[in-house]
Image (cartoon, rainbow, N blue to C red; front, side, top):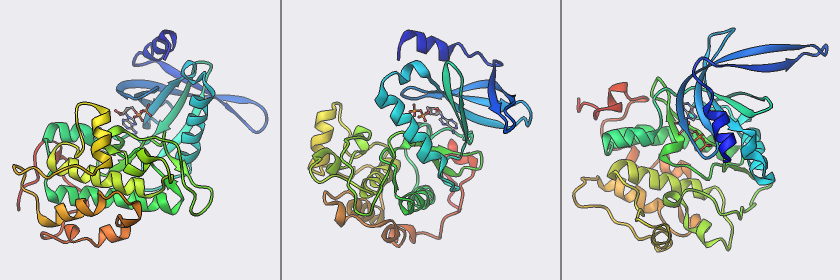
Length: 311
Ligand code: ADP
């Protein structure tokens, strides 16, 4: 990002009013106003803020992307694709896409506000989660993935930082910046993308292309990370991490008590051949989800800071 673009997006102080020009059918234009609130976080190009719609007082999350960061055709194409895919998705476990508009400086993407941050911050506070919590969270992520894959969308960047938590503690899969929509059955994608710790071996290999199974792989990495407290292939340099992924070189630490079903589920997912990984329906039938006395649909907000009580 250029320093000018950075300054532009940082100069939005709380209280700033952003105006959207809305064209009416009769050719007239009206103005919708949004009031900028607190800063929520920043990603690659975007900075995200809470916005209030002036007329309805509704709170949303708004991703502000400076147009200066979209000078390259590739960056612009990526944003167009993100918007096209995300706005077509409607599922309780996917961050709702509400609206987008632009002015001379920025593109604004209005999203369902997730007030409890991402699972990254959750894990940072909690260190690791209980098996009951992981059951509850994974079922919701699998539900979102079933919907995505049914609509031929591969997320390709599933990770804790893209799993948002709503005020009701629902998981919401977000950030469709690397998502791909397949045009025909059996299509294989070739672009290398993803986040180092979560990238599947067939993406690194690149020869046969990749498909929906990369999201199942990432789900295995997510399950391990939630239960153990750190990603299975993490090292201090990316090349070594990639080598470990290609060799499926990871282990379960002795000092973290893990049930046999949880280890079995992770081992079934983290295999090199994508065709040998369980399907999402296979996963839902895995004994990992039937162990214990059942799990709640949603966890209480107290689990943002402390493990759920045993009772
Ligand atoms: P990028 O696509 O540039 O990586 P992100 O989508 O990751 O941007 O958003 C950057 C940050 O903004 C996130 O890490 C999070 O802190 C915050 N954020 C994004 N979307 C929401 C949302 N719907 N609700 C609350 N915070 C959000």
